Image 1 (cartoon, helix red, strand yellow):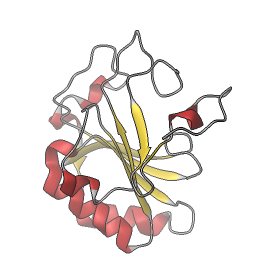
Image 2 (cartoon, helix red, strand yellow; image 1 turned 180 degrees about the vertical axis):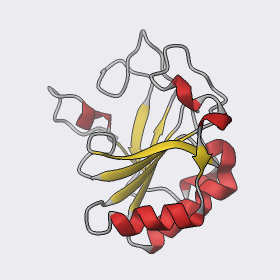
Image 3 (cartoon, rainbow, N blue to C red; image 1 turned 180 degrees about the horizontal axis):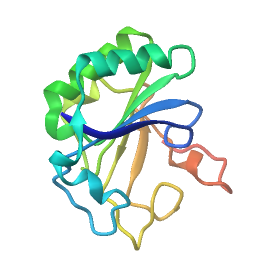
Length: 155
């Protein structure tokens, strides 16, 4: 599994500081995608156990979640990294353009964003979006956390 980069992000998983890995080789190629550099596997560098562990060591005590932006097309490897993060007491999250992922992958996640990018519907901050952000542990839809005017929680 190749990654284009990794970064600390603050908005993608509400109430968490996340270490995000941007996975290369996305087969979806959604029109209007904000990260077309992720479409080609060769754009990235290999995410090795050593690199992953060194990132977790570097940000230990500073992050509460590990987020993968894609990577479900490398399911077994992705699950292995997610479980390594969980073993360190971190929450896990995945952003995918798919409508759903396998049950095994879901079991390795706390948070899951599903749905392809559709320009006319907008992203998670848009009340009309087709995308869904869920807390899988509590079976809650959390899209409202991305809306600045809406404070109501829906399930």
